[in-house]
Image 1: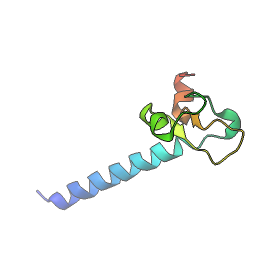
Image 2: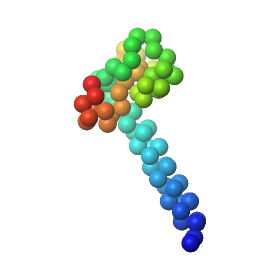
Image 3: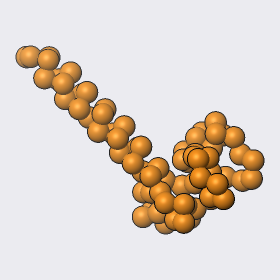
Length: 74
């Protein structure tokens, strides 16, 4: 059996899941649903399985991922 194809398939799957996780945090500031509390740290937010972005002022920094919206987590 040729294991090169197995390694290639594993790499493709890993990269696909990584891009899915990143895009699931691409939520507009208006659509963000709070996943934390005021003053939550980045580490604590990420440990809860949420997204963290403090780049936009007056927007929620710790928020649910996009696919959580479809499941009704908020």
